[in-house]
Length: 84
Length: 192
Image 1 (spheres, rainbow over the protein chains, first blue to last red):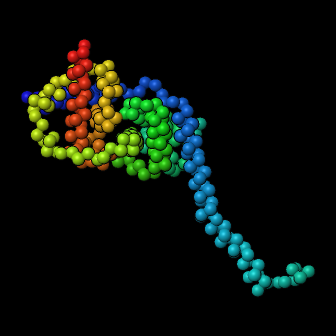
Image 2 (cartoon, chains in turn yellow, brown; image 1 turned 90 degrees about the vertical axis):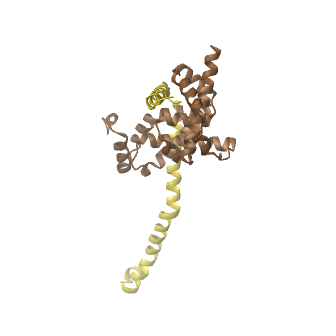
Image 3 (cartoon, rainbow over the protein chains, first blue to last red; image 1 turned 60 degrees about the vertical axis):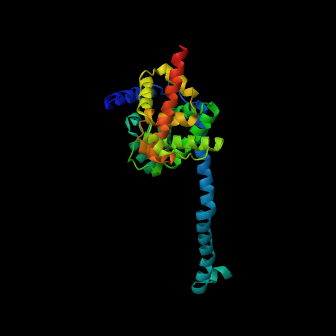
């Protein structure tokens, strides 16, 4: 009958052998370029989505404020410069 | 260079700097630390360079996109490898359309002592050169669980979480995979 000590020894042996299997060469060089190109693309897509959602809405609000601003000025301000 | 001592930084320190400063160069440091290991894990499990490259690509993207979710409660390497195994498992499931196995845990509890002893005796004599050859002959899911347990020292609980199965199912699978390894080693020794 195997003791706990024997089982630990076997497990230790397996771990040693499996850990020795770790790579000795680098991953393909093109992989790095592909990963960072994908990250750049995702970042660009994120920026575009942001542009047409958050930033577009903000721009609309800002634009409306600009349109409304002269009316407010007209109601209270001086018209002389515009008439001339 | 902005970070001259970057090689001395721990993974966690690098992640904190990435989150604080959004420095892309630091992502490259993490890439350099892990991409090769991830690639070779995928290659070891699936045995195909193109598939391994595609999976390693997807793993690294997932790691970088989810880096803010890493809490530091475990080692970063374990987190990266769990994503790697998940990705490989997804690939294997899609490719083979493997149904979730119904594992009878009672079978595990009543394995004969003789059977366990024989398997242990065989595995006790395992040599590295043999292991590489034997792993090539195992099915991807058997290879994967053995790598998780013996290369990355994941606990059965961690493996259960990664594979979304119960701990007793993990023990059963580990037993089955070790059996196969022992069986093949036995055949190899008989041949010699």
